[in-house]
Length: 212
Image (cartoon, rainbow, N blue to C red; front, side, top):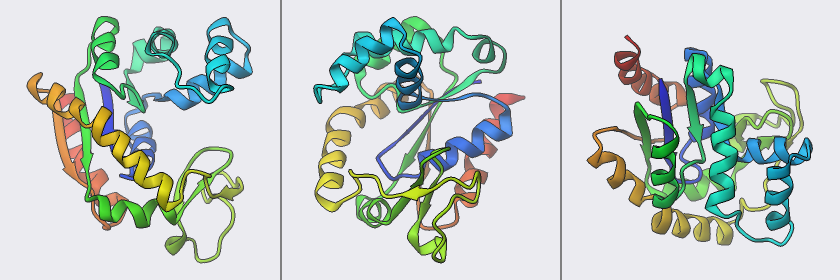
């Protein structure tokens, strides 16, 4: 299966992506991870992306799409399918992706924005593996239960920045829901304050039908 994961910042995409990837044995592909890998390895495309990032500018769609295309061409994606997280973010990127690959399903996590403020401002992220936690569940823990890495607060997890990020999501990324709905690929789920396992069960019940 080739899957896209959509949802506003803080909707729980990271947690669900890890679980989905583990269950179906497919690579979890985050554009942020791809950028970091290419920059670390000093690839030509990575250095081009870095030139924009260092200036505080958005990486152009053309560069982002090339990096994604290269990642999807690797053996693990061809053999096992993949889960795309963080791409596409815009209609232009979605249209470019259609020329690269075939998508089987788009999992959209819809959640009330009022819940997101509490989630994001209380979020702690593992510096090593990227696993996310909320302070209310940590019971004072400062290391990741998954890998033991240090937990930290992202600089953009403050009320002002969160509101700005949600506004950008509504303007740029939310139209993707309509785009993929028209293609008959969207699978809508409601994010709540229930344990992540509840939403995971709902998502996998639908994905299992595609995997048969």
